Image (tube, rainbow, N blue to C red):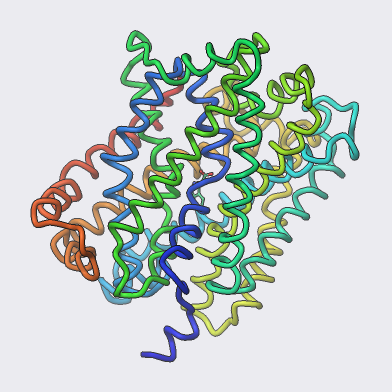
Length: 457
Ligand code: TRP
């Protein structure tokens, strides 16, 4: 139906799609999560394993999500329904995707709000340390509202005029700002040690846990496992080459992760700070590092602006997953969907926003999860991140990969992948089909088990 596809919207150009999908991939995962995992995981060895996981596992699975989306031209629920008909149990997997998008968006926006706040921290809260800042209800909720509003404004504009247009503006800005911070960071005295830590593998650090964490990060960073790439794929034309465009998404996303390493580790080592400080790395350690360096105020401002931009291009894709469901499957307009879901996301985000010390029951949920919490954490935000953003995504990726390879059928999926592609050879297709049927479900199952057992670097 031509009219339906017109109402749904489509990407206006190849580069527009690539930048939008790369924008989804590039986010807090690259600039906050990847550096702290690399810092804890011993540097270069983690980086190398991560690279292999992204290329060998993440990329082929990315092609699968994009193919399912383009085949069906639908949101994750509609995409599965298009293959199975309306009565299948598999539709629950699509519903999980939409719900996961909603939940991840809620707490992701809280962290993104902190980034926005840190960009202007000298103005709004110059003397506060991170703990006090994150525990101030007025500040964190105000910032959350600002960030969510930006997300809504982009998504309400639709695919080409909203998401694509803003991605084309924001990603180049992100790139330039990162280059500026890198120049400052690598010209500090003692920077070389940080680069060596980041690039030279020390294989004595490698363990099965580390590999599982790197695999999980490969899925997280490419926005996989919850249908974001099904949704973005659904706005692709049949003429588009999924392998080439998807390949560029992987290249850009990986480049930004490496650039994040070049921003952060030289500065950390130059200032003599321990890289293995975990999630606090970006919000606690970096501001201290910036404060000590020449031009630090400017560098700090630039860094947190770029972090906010990276988060924004990801949050729009999280919202788009949910919005596309309501646009496709109900009579709601895009505007109505965005307003209602935006409002609900704000409400859902409040407990996460208040979970870092502002309100006791959200900050310490030991009444539900016991003294040990989950992986030692007991605040609402960290628990959602574990249940949905980590274990949930792995479970989602498991069911989606089994669905694509065995219910839709890997050979059928390969037909869609081949459509419009000029670079895929027969051998590549055969390898892809084999990977999709056997290797990827198996590997993802290992990530699920690792998550349930609580791997931690
Ligand atoms: N890839 C995003 C990042 O690196 C985070 C993310 C995970 C995500 N899953 C997603 C973003 C789904 C959008 C949609 O920060």
